[in-house]
Length: 184
Image (cartoon, rainbow, N blue to C red):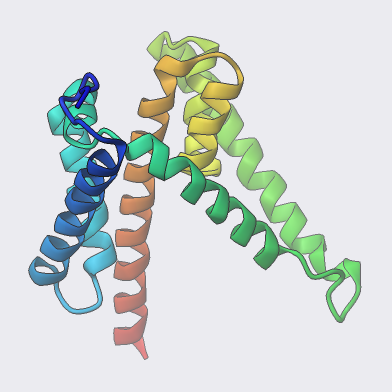
């Protein structure tokens, strides 16, 4: 059989290998994480796996990662959009006023820190915008934005930075929950 650049003879075998790596990471996280923290464990293991191997080695080990990941990403977008819909709240649109004000202050501060920090660090505008998207929208939107705007070299860093941000945010959220539970 003809082989691709990863040395895999069949797309089905490539998909099976990629799924096997994903299942192994999930199983390792399940057995090594404290009860209720397997999601955090699998995120840390996945980010560590992806960054330690490098793009070429990870692509050889998981040749169908993108082919399997993109359809699942669209399912995620659709489910997030479906959950966000629903029309006006019972109290009317005025209920959203404080939330909109908070969002404007939050994103305004984010944008200011991004531009000032980016200038100090000497980063290009494209890098800043993908980093911003990773911070606000997460890994999926950062990667999608990078590809849509013609920066394919920033797609994987956007995914990794967004995933790392999710991992850190999840860990801090779980810590905040534990602290508040102790304060009751």
